[in-house]
Length: 193
Length: 193
Image 1 (cartoon, rainbow over the protein chains, first blue to last red):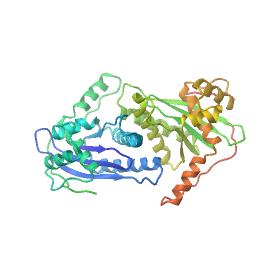
Image 2 (image 1 turned 45 degrees about the horizontal axis):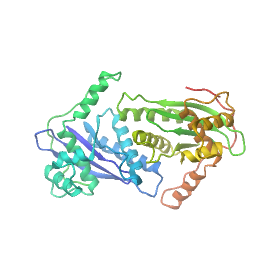
Image 3 (image 1 turned 135 degrees about the vertical axis):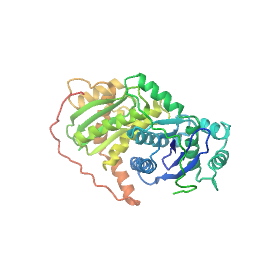
Image 4 (image 1 turned 90 degrees about the vertical axis):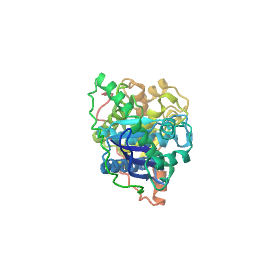
């Protein structure tokens, strides 16, 4: 399966596409950042993020989108913008009928490094090893986005399946996910926009 | 000018359209609520809100959108959804090039009742008097949305003008706002969806 990981933020949204399946080598498809300038009003910054996420979805047609779960207890000065960027990313994915999963920072750290309290450098180093890259993806938001995508594949998309099952048991019709299990040749490796 | 006020929320987004200008009677154009079910995943709820806001913008073609400013210190259990609903509303407006203004709850309370600490009942009663309605708009989210629109008109859209001036002084080209100053006949009065 191909997963777009998104580390949301108003100034920088990390974007990382990873392809593969549990128990097989994972491959980097693309990594980069959607940036917005602090000099323009928030509504227009959110539109820029929307366009950026849509462009990544158009180009890479992922099977699922994994977004960092935002908590109210995070840094208060940026939390509103981060929450809103995450919301826009969710809308972009949901509009296309793509499954959206939210993973907490500690789930991501635990998945890629075995330690839920790993620091950014450790996460970046593990992402570099797991995807067999020549260098650590930069900035940290880009590496974190790849870690989110890796986490999603390794957790087997279980959250999406649980949510789909719950949704199906309610009024909403269930969605079928076309999870591709074959590992494709990475389109780009180590490429950054 | 015609203003769409939005009291954002994941379960209920209050929507209220008011028309008029400073020093002249204001008129209700429409009031209602965009609802989403707690039983469906958040990304789909946000898409429902997006469609709802777009439908109100299509129908009423406001000159500006006034949204409640969300603070991180608010109720933590619902703050993320509220912030995301506000973000979606901002995107819907900004995509159309509409000015977006954020007003705090105390600014709204002070504008419509003269008291920044007024309770919901006082705000609702003042909205009813200001717009010469037969009954208080319900639910409270709908009344709050009208209060936001009234606040925006009475504050003279000063925040939008300041932001537009600041934006023009930076790299972004300034936007012209087609503020209609004539008071039109209200399309609907006391109508709720």
